[in-house]
Image 1 (tube, one colour):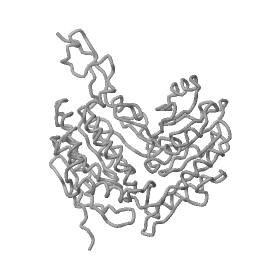
Image 2 (spheres, helix red, strand yellow):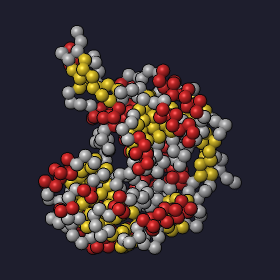
Image 3 (tube, rainbow, N blue to C red):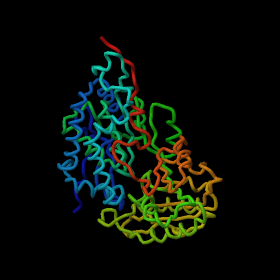
Image 4 (cartoon, helix red, strand yellow):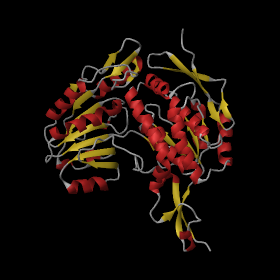
Length: 457
């Protein structure tokens, strides 16, 4: 007998709402797991108005309730699921390995506990956070919100990004989250926990919608955050919506460094978290012959087993077979003409239940600026290319993270000065390194806040 479907209601300003229109959420094998309520445009409009009409909680209350929500998220039964059952469900539905889900949910709990500190790391040193601060008696900058309502179009390829928007809540924004249809469980559980911790239904809402109503969530907010590909980045660039696109994270090994001493870090940067994250390395550049390094990477990645996502030992992401085959066809077409050390004949390994593992791929390029070096896929797919000092930093541009293995201080200076490189890790640090309090792609607070001068009697 099939297990009953999990009912994921919308979480509106008047409480949970079960819509007439519902979407069946399936796992990677095609088995139905949940029904997600899809709210109409009118519901969105009314919910966003309720957020706008509400008042934010005092800062100290927000911080305390966020920490409490983290504990509820991790410890209590929500939507009929224990924390362990929730994590297994996310793995089965998203195809992200269970170990990766656990790391991501631990990061969400950590962010909830530390968001009151982490969010304010972006505050300028010359500003205060409250106009009542004694500094304003003589005149001071005060760090204030640019608006009151923040909308999030959530990603579905990984639970981790849900740790970021908690900072907006810590700063006093009221939040509307449109969950991904692929993985709505994490935002539903998190917002339920936030409400149980004391955030009112007019402070944070979950608005699952179809595509017709999706833009209304952003249109009715003061500021927004969206995840997607290059098309999303282009669409929202320069607007009141902050796009989070491909990371195209890279590793550079210069001639004064032996890559053999750092092979563990290089391979781990490519395969950690199943290779699904924007902070996984997708391109490795080496000053010298890239062949030996490509061969060594391929040998390591080839040894990773193919397992269902809920398996304790799973490392690689899983997708429905049809979706996996589509990614494989795209890769093979774009990789034509490269030297394939791994995955040249395909990357799909079917598990026999309607799902398939995306196996790693390693391709060697003949120049650092080859078109393929800019291709990022949602599994361990890496392009290994030659680099020389004469090539300069051009091939390194547009990187969310760049790990540089070098003794050249001047090169590091140039990389830090390059505006399209968001983060520079010098030495034996994997591209996926991150912790609360340091910027991911700049501080979110840089986008959400501004300073105003205040002087008072």
